[in-house]
Length: 267
Image 1 (tube, rainbow, N blue to C red):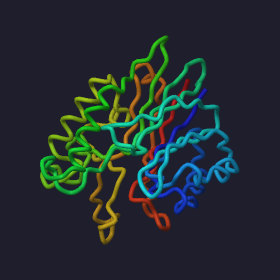
Image 2: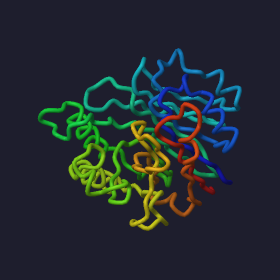
Image 3: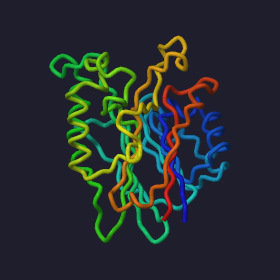
């Protein structure tokens, strides 16, 4: 049985609900993980999602900032809304669902952006980001009884040289500094997570999921970064059939600066 899973930093779910509807009309994923919903739970547009066929909804939101949501066409069970760094931010939710005969634990993350100055001594936002990634070491891919795990979200780090438009120019820019990328990859490997987007894509091939609002013409300049990720436990790698970065969504009306990434699995 095949299923599709999409992850997207929507940058305000209520403001950009028409774009969500466009994504669903064009790609119709079975499960949709949103980040930066910027919406308290009582104002989340659950009725609109149910009208679109997403009867099963798990949300962890707050007013004006952060927020994650996982909506699904198939039953899901909320497992955890984890707090990181002793800060009450809505940046994680995990759910469990069935695919074929396998139980899958799905993590939806929104990692702190980290501000502008890559120095934890003078920038508390960057210090928070580094601490958050360090605590993610405890999020493990391996599950008991052969269950599978998937981790998706806006992880706000472009770890590899060709996950950014210019490795040399961005080495001192938050999201691609060595302290971030090294910690990020160490965390991923410690958790035994497979980076599905790079499985069959050469490391010297550019991959972007985000283009800044600051660019006069994002498409022509193409100064992107891969900030959005899809990982899985190793026992799900054989079921992974590929993914799509929906680059055209960056050109939709009033877009997010991130675009959806859609993964296909066969279980």
